[in-house]
Length: 113
Image 1 (cartoon, rainbow, N blue to C red):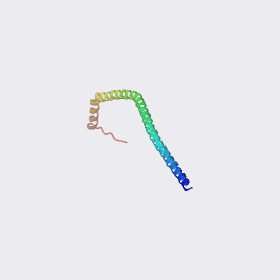
Image 2 (image 1 turned 120 degrees about the horizontal axis):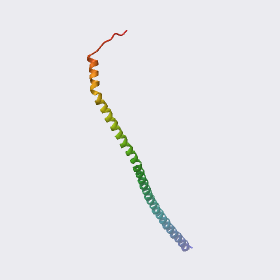
Image 3 (image 1 turned 30 degrees about the horizontal axis):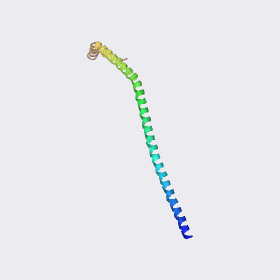
């Protein structure tokens, strides 16, 4: 009976070792699969990010071209207006200076009632 118990215990120990090996392999496989899934997810995220970045740059390029054209046009119009104002100022500058100097030096005081 003792030999039979010893053989039964040995069989149980062998089964436990085998089960432990199976569990260990399962854990290793699961860990490996989790790492692979994480790496795949990172690759997908990077691809998605690169795609969206490219779409954004394309969108930005399309919409800033119109803004640049409008900005250049407004800048040209502003330059023309500034030139007109400066020309008008120079045109009447001599007369204005003479009038100002005359008003200062040739004062005609009048009494206030």
